[in-house]
Structures are given as C-alpha cells and as structure tokens.
Image (cartoon, rainbow, N blue to C red; front, side, top):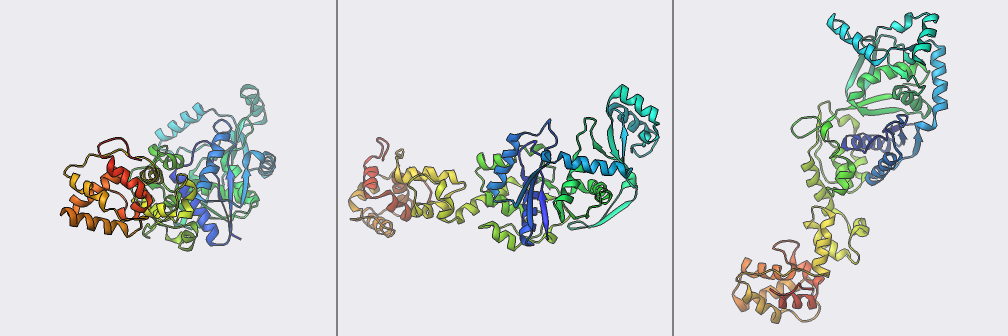
Length: 448
C-alpha cells in the first residue's frame, strides 16, 4: 500500500516550493491508489502558530489537495518518549552539555587544523561524576544520536543511486535540553507509525536522509523509499529563498489573482521535460503523472509563466466552475462572452458593469456621424448574436465608414473601452434600451 505524507511546520505560509512537494506527493498517492497524510510538524513551539496551521490547511484546500488522514506531532509526545527510551536502552543516545559557543570554537579549531568540522564525541568520555557536575552547573543535557559512521546507500526515486557517509557527519542532537524531541527523530517515528511507504521531499534533505535511515533501523522500522526533488530557482537560475514571501500561495491567490489549477499545472511539470499546459482538473494531472520524469537539474520557476498559464486556465473554465465567484446575476452567456479576455477572474466584475451597470462616456473623435446613424439603424426587437453584424453593415452602408472608423466609435460608446470581448456577444447582454441610452449619452453623464 502506497502511503505518503506532506509534513510542513506551521511556522509560516506555504510558498511555491512547499506546494510543489505537497502536489507531487498527492499525485504520487493518487496515481498509485495510495493514501496522502497531512501532518503538522509543530513541535517548534516558539515559532509554530495556530494561525499558520489554519493558513496551510486553507492553501491545500485551495489547491484541491484534500488529505486522507491528518496528524499533529504535538499530540504525540508520549509516543516520542517511548522511542527515546528505546534508543537509550540500545545505547544509541548519549547526553552532552556543550554550549553553542563551545561547539563553534571547536569547529573553528578543527577547520584551522584541516580536520572535518565534525562533533568529536567528547561527551562520550564523561564519567558519571562529570555528568553529575555538569548537570549541577548547566542543568539538563541535550541528547545526541550515535551514528554508525558508515556508507548509507539507497536507490532514490528521482536521483537514482545515492549515498551518504555518516562518518562525515556530526552525531545529530535529537532531544533538546528542555526535553523536546527534534524533527529528525519525530519525523522518523511518525513515518514508522503511519506506515509511510515513500518519502518525497526536496534535495536539501539528502544528507538528513542518511541520518534518518540509521534511525529507522535503530527503531526497528521499515525504511521507506526516498525521492528527492531538485530545488526551484528563478528564471535567471538564482535561488528563490529571498523571494518566497512574495511567492506564498496566499499572495499568488489574493494579490496576483492566480488560479489554483495554474499553480498545479505548472508545478506538476517543473523539473520534467514535459511541456507545461493548462489542466482542467487534478484528475488530468494524475493521469499524466510519472515521478520518473523529474530530472536532477534545478527547476526554473518564472512568475510570468505562471501568470500566463493562469490566464489560459481561466479562459478554458466552464461556467459551473466559476459561478460562485462571479458578480451576482452573471450567467453562462456573460461568462462565455468575456472569459477569453480575462487575465484574472476579478476582471470579470468590470465587464459585468459594462453589460449590467454604468459606464463612463468616451469622447469619440470623428465618430459623430457613425453614432448619429447608429441609433436609427439599430435592429428592431430583442438583440441577438446576429444583430451586431446586421447593424454595422447597415451603418456602414449609410455612412460609408469602414473598419476602425466604423467599429471603434460604437465599441467606445457602448463599453467605454477600445478593446475587449467580441461585440456580437456583448450587444445582446447590454440590451436594446441600454444601447440606445448610451448612444444618446455621448459626452454627457455616465450611461446606464
């Protein structure tokens, strides 16, 4: 049974890098008939907030990435205590009292002596009397995990054959002096307990994976398959780290007006050789998903590409998909008429004002003759999709106007804009009474 997880820390808002990891995990689960766990890694109590937790949930729902199960690490401290006791009994955890300043000094000395800046396990040489003295002087210790110091290898789902030499790493701190377990431990315990079969995350976790595989084995758990996606860079190849605030999902949604399916469609293909195309729904992305298509090179994320894709996604959306987001009264005829001219959905409100509200009159240079003839030549009865063609043909015959000289004065008079959706679609929506009134209001009060 395939089981994956997305496990953000609620210490900030989701950005495009987080969203890509969540999406790829979700697609992998759905493609393989598996489950998707949403887990909040919230043991960092200084920075984790309920506000951020709710915001992450909202972002996942906006993307359509609904989860099959939910968990919080803050609910599982008793389970972590059991794992800690197991590791202590096996001799894999040892107490240490060094301060950050002392460790930094040692690191500098090792570098100066051309030695790897790896923790020297000095704490392992402490006697019981030393430990008692340090406890009295400095309080409770932190606890380090004793690494095997070997080559840990796995076949990565993205990178292929991968290995980490844990002899080149410092024994990681798993428990803080205040007794709280750290991510390296809690994540492994959770993955064991929730039977996670595959861990798919960013390549910045590769070294950590070597450590965690040793932890899986020390705790007697089944080691999952690992896949490490390349990190996102900007269009110029630079890292996104300084821009992630501006690229939060909330910012893209509320300030940039980006459509959720545009985010999904782009992130599902970034890092592959497959072309980025608009997607109607997540099901279509699942059908074409293949984790093996992701390469090792950094994936370039361009906000301009996302904006352009969002417009294409929007212009393909059926009315039922956007009904609840349109102005009250807007129907499917209106949507089909205007969607091809929208870059973002909130622009539809301005076009609804054009067909159902008031517009500001626009003075039309050299258009007086066309407008004077237009009112008297407007076809009788309700206006239809054929009315525009018949009307402009009659006006052209009466005035001799053609092309821009014919069409622009009418468009400006009826919409207040020099470009936009096809007038043959807008004319019936505006209606005969408004058309006549707007023709009469040229240069006067706003036309309704």
